[in-house]
Length: 112
Length: 115
Image 1: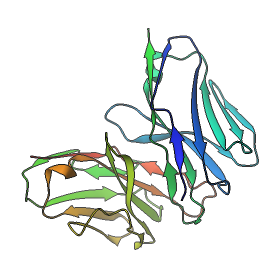
Image 2: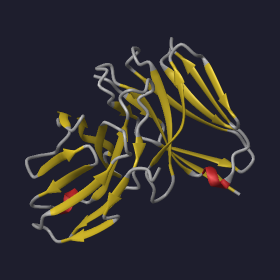
Image 3: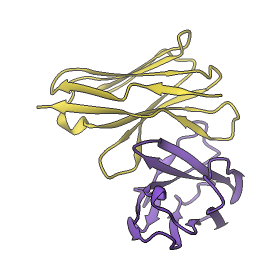
């Protein structure tokens, strides 16, 4: 079945870059997403990338997609303490019903 | 837009009691999703609706869980009877199936504690 894997925890210092990685098994997904969950809140869409793109940049965020290796990454430049949250990778399931397959989430801890 | 609205935000109940969680999707969205989040199991999709019709309820844990969507602006998730292992944060999300990106918009969640 479809599977999305993420490392569970990442710790960086304020001002450094953070790179959160995600691997997946379903190569037919057309869109891949990054969601952010702050403490006590729901998931919020950060950015997404279409499967025919290799890279997408949005201010401090850079998404890289390696379709051959089925690897997606999110780079946050100049990481701030406000970036501390759980980051979820997600992709649209192959059944084309609108269902999203989420990874387990990576907890990003930013130390001052 | 007010976003996805969930109520209550927190619910504490005793084992065996009935619990009803409520969700109002974003106006104009025609797909609605119920998720459960726990430390042990992460984010799990319980059920989702397209145009008020349940499409996939394979994630519903057992018969104690039921979900309804009587109209496009309201859905409920009911647990009867509740058990301590149902303690979790329950999220509702909605999307518009007409959009190409399938982006889901999440509510703030209901934190359920079953004693």
